[in-house]
Each structure stands twice: as C-alpha cells, then as structure tokens.
Image 1 (cartoon, rainbow, N blue to C red):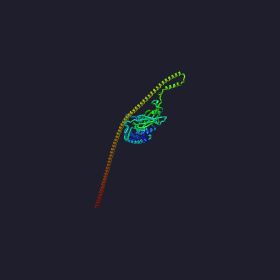
Image 2: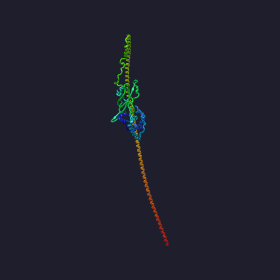
Image 3: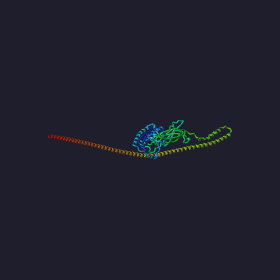
Image 4: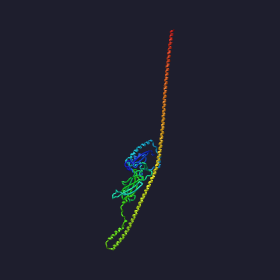
Length: 495
C-alpha cells in the first residue's frame, strides 16, 4: 500500500529462517515476513531462483508498470497428477558443494532484500509484495448507507449532501490468525487494506442500469480510508453529493498487489429535513373544470343589459356546457390522480422488488463467495497437505541420499586410509628389508675383505717362507759347493 498507517520508514522486515533442498533441485528458503506497523508476521516459502529473478522483475516493473487484478498473485492450482509426476521426476540430491554455494548466495541475497525493503520507491511495487507473500484483499462482506446528512461546505445556491457509507470486511476462517504472546502470527490478508469508494451519477430516466452523462469517468478524488480486515468495519464519508441526484457507489478493497471485486450500492442524495414542500398536485385542489367554469361565467356577468331572454338562454347554455365540461374535467382529473397513484405505487413496488432482488443477489453473492472461500480453503489445505507430503518425502529422500553419500564417502575414506596404511607398512617393510640386505651385504663385503686380507697375508707369509727356504737352500747349496770346492782344492793340494 502506498504509505500505510506506519508513516515514513520501512513497512516490512524479512528474516531467513533456513533452507533445504526443494522438489526442483533448488534451495527452498523459509522466510519470516513481519508487517512493522501492525506487528503481524507470516511465513513464506521461496526458491532460490525466485530470489535471483526478483531483480529482473523489479527492473521490468519499472520499465512497464502493471496493474494487478484481484486474481493476481494467487497462481493456478497444480493438479495432483502433475504433483505426482513432479515428485517422480525428482532431481538427485544436492552435493556439499551445492549447499555451500546456496549458503553464500543466500547471505548476499538477504542483504540485498533488506536494502529493497528500505527503498521508498518500492513501497507500491507489485513484484516485491508478491515475493513477500502479500495477497489481494477479499471483497467487503457488507456495504450499506449508514446515514445522509447536510454538507456544511455546500453553498446556499447549491446544497450538498454527505453520504456516510459503512464498509465491513469479511471474517477470516478460524485458525488463520493466531496470537502467541508478543509474537502475532497471522494471515497476510489481515494486513491493513485500502478501501476505496467511487461515486457515479445514475440517470433514473434511462433505466436502472444506465449511468448519466457526467458519470462516464470516475471521480478524480475517490473517497477512501484504511481498514483492518478480519471482521473490521469503517465509515467513509462521501461529501459533495448533489441534492436530489441518484448516485451509485462502487466499493473495493485494494492493496499493492491488487484489488477486490466491486460492491455496488445506490442511493438518492436527499436528506428528509431538507426536502422542500412539494407543489400541490392539480388533482388535490379545485378541478380545472371549475376554474374554466368561473372563467366562462365571467363574460356572462360582464355582458351588457338588454336582450334579456337571449342572454338568459345564452347563460343557461353556457352554464350547462360549463357544468358538463367541469364534470368531464373532474373525471379526467380523478382518472389522472388514480393513474398517478397507481404509477407511484407501481414504482414503489418495483423499487422494493429491485432492492429485494439486489439484496438477495448480494446475499447469494456473499454466500457464493463464502462457499468459494471455504472450497478454496479446503483446496488450498489439500494442496498444502500434498505439498508438505511431497516435501517430506523429498526431504527424507534427500536425507537418505545424503546419509548414503556420507556413509559411502566414509567407507571410501576408511578404505583409502587402510590402503594408505598398508602401503606405508609395505614401504616400511621394504625399507627394513633393504636396510637388512644392505647390512648383510656390508657384512659380507667386510667378511670377504677380511678373508681376502687373511688370504693375502697367508700367501705373503707362504711366499716369504718359501723365499726364505729357497734362500736358505741356496745358501746351504752354496756353502756345500764351497765346502766341496774347498775339499776338492784341499784334496788337490794334498795330492
């Protein structure tokens, strides 16, 4: 509504209560919307795609302003078969990456929504009110003319009348408005509604359904006020009505989303104590025949004396003719009076019958509206139950899939950890084996080197021993040869 009863500042506040996977593979967000002037709040479910499309809708609304009707924003009912088909075509559950991405997007979008709610230029935005869950108002349940009174603003030459119109709003079904302490939970239809009354002049000489020449366009400044629905009532003063004119008032309830159907009521702008004395009808005073009889007798009285017999005959004939004319005119006046009375009675009867028919039609319309409201409530409740059931199944399916995915991931992580541990054990075993092999190889090399060193030492000792023995043998042989030579020389010398 443009302005509202809360004055300047914000009209609504929205808080994100949480999100979960929806049927369309998108995040389903739960919003708590609060009407700040009245303190009423309600819950709205919106998908993440709706948040992302809100900016585009606001830009399109600024480029091409639209006027919503009463049925705007309610949407069409989804058949049960379509719901089952949609439930069967559920997309796979979200991944942890999707959940993190949704959380980041929702944090940014919630801040942007707070900025939009503080924008004064968007107070009458249809797209924003539809996103917040504001619904078009219902048709007023009762419209009647409370009273007619003098309009003190009228001049002496043009007396004006004020019509006081009482408007009652329908009572919400039981259970739609709940109050718990300081937290008032209500239906969005319980918000303050703008009730507008527009006046038309009806031409009574062109039939009851024909409007006059000056009623082709609606009043430039319609009479309006604010009223709170749910069995609320308000009186609207429609001033400046011309006295004696026949008016038709069209009453509608309106908010930023749309307006309700109009309720029409007609009244003759006439205050009883303002009525002037009506002119005396001809048939209630002296008949016209007697007036004409007096006028006919006047020339006879004014006739000069003389020719008395002729004048007497003339007067007698004139008097007889006047009497006959007077009787005929009396009969005609009586006939006209009877016809006038019959016509007035017929018009009163027609007017009563018309009012009775209008009242009956109004009551039937109200009953039909109430029945439609009950049927719509039952239908919406059934749809809500089916949606909740589908959402519950989807939530359970998503939770089951998420649980299975977590378990599968835990199993895979455990298997990977076990395989990594086994791999580490194998690597450690292989390292130990290689270390043992290296140690054995080093020991073998050391042993081999020691053996080779021992063998080399033994061989050198043997070689040295053999060389010493050879040298000893050579020395003994040389000594023996020298001894033999010495003996031989001595023998030779002896000989």
